[in-house]
Length: 290
Image (tube, rainbow, N blue to C red; front, side):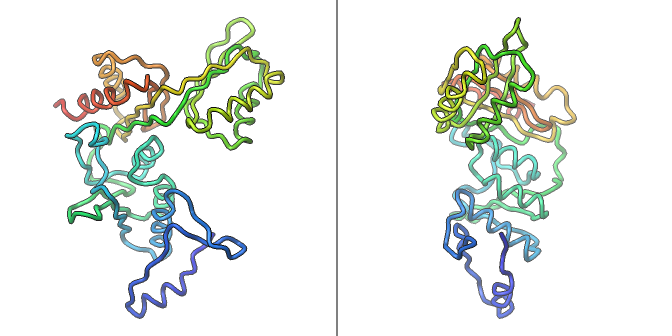
């Protein structure tokens, strides 16, 4: 994968505006091919990196990155700036503003990104390495209702079982997100994980085909779940942030099924019916309280 900068640079030297097909590319055989979802964002960042641009603006149907989806929480706040890591986590956990591939590329090549509206002339959100805002809180709350939970019940409690399961899924090109392994009871244990809803059928078929080798009792699936995450650099230095999230869910009467964390993210799995309610409760806890 490369960018032929010579042709573009020659046009720019003649003070011409260059239009590049951001959703398309050329394969090794010279055939025009689609770059997939996020291709235009990623191409724009790649061009900005190649030409050492001071800023790469992404014009889209929203005017910036918000603390949560304004369609769920009308008083969501627009962020003036956000770090690469925070934006990458938000994009990976369900935010639709930017594709995570474009953010990964911007971080790798230190490209300052800016999300701005293609419909209105107003300030957007800048994504960069370090922000001026002191991170004592979180950057945002994001939801994802496109996932399903799969549980392998009664697995043999032997070394290498987890490797067998996830190696099998990997070879089937099935991406796994949240993983939880139970404490072994007698000679068996359970492994629960999430996949995209579109991959549930294939995942179950693969696992059932190898039931004898994996030695599990049965499979449970649940497609009526959702994931809600908080993201922010404040999680690294403020030990009470996760507790506030759980407090918000408790006060809203929402039950947590699974918990998954990283350095700057806490995700919880909930009933799908509770997802929007959870987003509103958590957002209010962090952004409405003084």
